[in-house]
Image 1 (cartoon, helix red, strand yellow):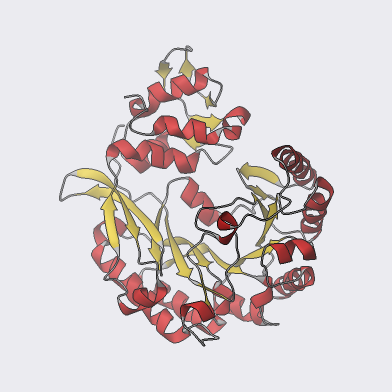
Image 2 (image 1 turned 90 degrees about the vertical axis):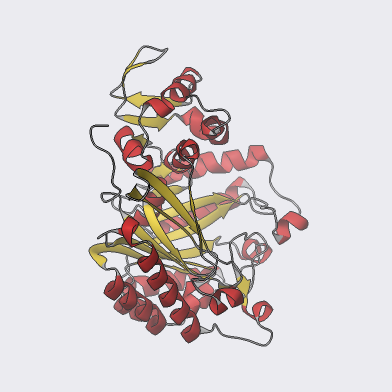
Length: 416
């Protein structure tokens, strides 16, 4: 590298976590808590106190990490959960105004609110838009009533359709639909009904996830019956991918298909190893840049207290920052970047990890020999690089076996 990376050119995002849901879905491994389970007898979120905690948390991070944040304003904001739409537009507006005053938000920033169709009161999307939301991610999951019941969802297919109508009426045409496949008793025909229905609603992005039995979830403890076979889910995926492509949705990430201009800027920031502040119970963050105290480029990650009551008692006090060892950075970078079908620009690897291309050259050579990655603009003789590539991409084969590809970048296995 001709100059040492400083971190100033790396985009900065903000993730805000809202941990409460009306009920906990049996497949969900996110940091979420059913309202009545968290505090017995409570039917609503502790809106005012939690907003104050978020503000205190963000203020604390801005003060303690000022050297790494520098003069950067927030380029993307994602409000996830849990169910952020349980909070009123007024509360969301207060949070955004605090961000605007204390760190700044770029004029063209993407500001996303996650919402479950069954938790939106009629007309609220207009108020969310007025508060500063310009993108919504709707947790549709399925348009099959039986499937929604099996997933523990509290909304109906009509709720999703009505939510989309209200989004458009509010001028929020940029929205994502979450869709799942491989559901109990689902065959290819029923999976494709969901896909075709989602396409007719014309979201800018469709996130298409395979139902997995994550450790610690109710489904992991008591797996649902009649799950489709691997062969059937593979046929679901192939048929859905073809339908998305025909409808103009480009497959750009392992589980995401978007129309032109519809990619999630916040998720792309993650996948390109950008920086982000993680605010709220259980949120994670990442900052990077040159630390003058040690005279080196660092990558720093944060974790928050997961349990919402303790987080509210001690917002900021339980925040933990740890520096990522340089030997671990290639794996962490690839864990994100190789989810993108377009892969990554080598110059970005160098700028965002503080490491040179030789750090990963030997590992990439071995992966290319196995047909797992390909290169753009490289002088590559099949055994080593004469010139570093401009871009590295996972092959179709590499995406299929992404976990096997990624493990090669772990410090114990990656080349020097």
